[in-house]
Image 1 (cartoon, helix red, strand yellow):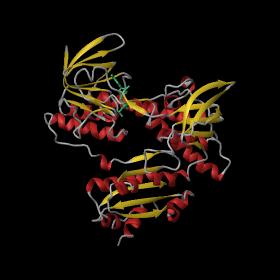
Image 2 (tube, rainbow, N blue to C red):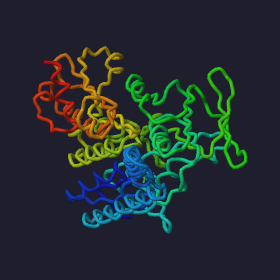
Image 3 (cartoon, helix red, strand yellow):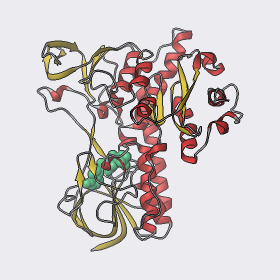
Image 4 (cartoon, rainbow, N blue to C red):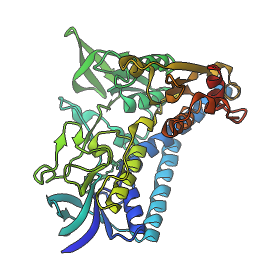
Length: 451
Ligand code: ADP
């Protein structure tokens, strides 16, 4: 039976950063992944391909304001596929030069030191001294009649996707981040978009005040809030969706396509609980050192449900690697307070740390300052003057959170996040000569309002 110092289940963001680090430090390491390739769902059907489409659509939106510019959806997909293929080639080279191997197969945990791997041709038994479970999450599909007529994010974003043209109309079940991102770009491309959400607002997991500001800036879409989808049926060449509101009243939506965007759930490898690893509702239970209740077994990334974002998974993976190298002691910890989130709607919305709603709930005394994009040079240049930068400082003027809507949101939020990570204060931001003409200037302008 082959024996390794470290085995990872999965080869996504939760696994490969640790695998590279440990291999470099002389550990024998192997990754097991059922796709047999590095980067997990992020590259196969998640962050990278969806942003490849959204970025192109955002540019298209700007261009069409100047001219009668036309863009074929087939070309957008072609570009997206090229990006994915190019990145897979890059990852294959990185693996080869690091001397790292991925076994293509599905791993099952047999006991606290043994895995069984089902490959296309074999059943392998492998021993490990340390295990990193980075098996990610899967797209959750509602169990309702007609669910088989729905597309999911994979049908839009995988290489050679099932959706090859913009549907005349699309109904999106779920107003979470995947639903709202898709609704934004489909609307700009000319589809008639309807979003159905069970809760009383879009993006119910996010700060209500920030979402309210964003909602008014989103491209045109019809929303049915407080509504649940009951069934979907064929009606000629269209789909008929039955929805029911909080008062029990039925309504119908007819659409060319229906997308199910009802969230993701942790993908727990077989044998996890039988081996004594604790599992909670949100995923495998992991402490801030990423250890499960069995100290040499780690759970990183989407599978632990702590902060299901690729960049958080990467950080958690490196925390696990450091703790493995320290002999399963807790030398590094994961801190979610400085992990930024970006909603890639058009416009974008990002936040990090304490938001105004959290500050109110936790009764945190804070000073809030805002810079409006309406007065920003770069926003004017781009003719996209909606949005703002808002920063939250505590009683000692230490940065504790912030959010950005509009131009460069996903970039600017990183500086606020670094500020939180490094304990910067308002004066640090105020005294920084941010480059002109860039939206980042808003950071020092906003902070100076406190002096
Ligand atoms: P994360 O961002 O947390 O790394 P991903 O979903 O991107 O999550 O990556 C997890 C990878 O693990 C995916 O490629 C998934 O198909 C793979 N995977 C999930 N369960 C198993 C398993 N039991 N054996 C092998 N690979 C698995």
